[in-house]
Length: 334
Image 1: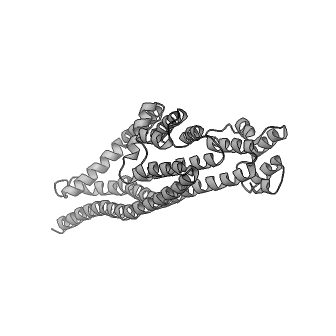
Image 2: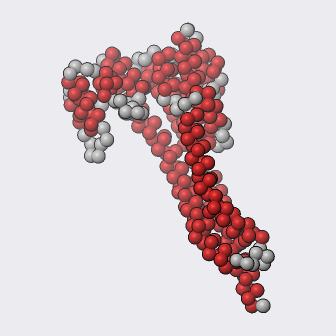
Image 3: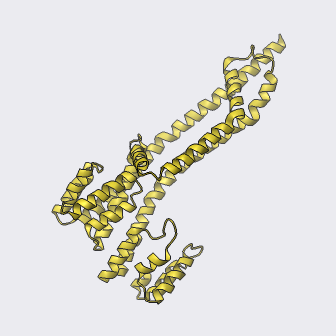
């Protein structure tokens, strides 16, 4: 967008924008430049050249670019697009960053348990062989459980892989995808965070599309494509049909039953004041802040809980082994 604001030709602006060290878009930029030099518009060039799955430029990006070309405000639209994608990426990155430490903690705990089961506990089995009646019950349970995992762990792995491939296949079924996405939104703690992220993305795309002159029904349809949740995809498509028939956005969203009261009330106020795009932009800030705060609260609770749980499991295993060793030493002394 900066290149366009400086008055450079569009093809040159695209080439310079993608010419960054280690950039992954250099090849795509060259194809875009070739199309633009033949007389194609930027939106048409995107449609012809961006054939990857998922596409680099999503439907919202392309629609906003096409609308800006029609209105003759492409540089300003590209600047708004840069802000839009930057804010969306910032929210996703902040949530992912908050989850890194718990993920590392769980990974380290899994590796530690695997080493105990595969390497450490079998050595104790040889020591306790023939003395089952003298070792504590906890130790026998630990040794027996580790033996079962070593013997039948492949079955657990096979069942997990079979379940994963079954899930991948069933995700193509719209009814299964709808039920799965609705269930995820009902998960305690995690569901509300997911809902806020989805609503932030939908409200932001609606606001930007409306600001670029896209009609409301079309903006709803395009926003449904980036909702990444089948429940909201379906609700937005139904709302788009209702709005196309002349119904207000507030009533169309309320009929779906998928959107919270806060969003409905702000949409109603925005429509009544003829400032729907601005109100939706304000709503994105609310949901972005709420999602980040909720993610931080969840991590604050999750980290000590994981530390305590891992510590308890490790302590039980170590104490079980140590108590058995102490019993063997007492037997030898006697």
